[in-house]
Length: 279
Image (cartoon, rainbow, N blue to C red):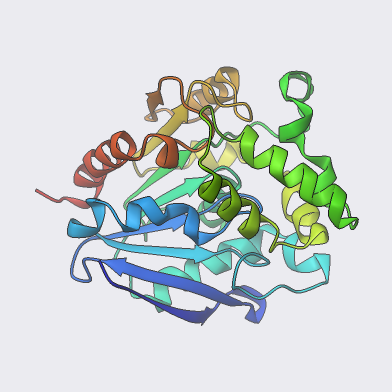
């Protein structure tokens, strides 16, 4: 399937990179990637069966990929800025109540959007490896391994940052990546400057009140071998969403859309049929 790319203006005047593909006349799905990642993490979805039915839009978050990278940490610290980015994508790209698919940190950004804009302009929310529990929670810290805590990725020493990035990317998967996939993912992770990684990851707003106000359908896509988001983190998130649904992936890590792309796409298509009204 062909896709087009362009830039739009997000919050604070930040220019955001957009990839727009799939069926241009199909119901819209908006993909939001995770921390230190890139819109290319959704490549298998853009090249798979979802693209035949749905219009697929993926962005590079502010400070990531081909979007603007401002040095001032203020651009990454405020919930409203991230929310305005998502609102700008939905409006500028003329997406009619899209299904939002948000991975890891992207889940926080989707909740930033819901906090400031509510559910009226989206049809549903698919959280992938995302939780309302903050990374600083003692129970989270006690279980997370050093490779996925990845503090070395904040370092200005490129040797340290590169070593930490390689370990982090490997830690996101339960299976072994091919050499090409590992190289590609390390490459686009390294596009994000250390100070942006730090500023965007360490903010921890309280999202639980926002979940209580969510009226759209919500599904949690989670790999049971995830080293970043544990079962108790998922359980806490489900408690906060009265109508939330868990879609587990056995033996899968933090990125089920990559490790189990066919299974992931099938479940996402089912959820999209429910939320977007596709027969």
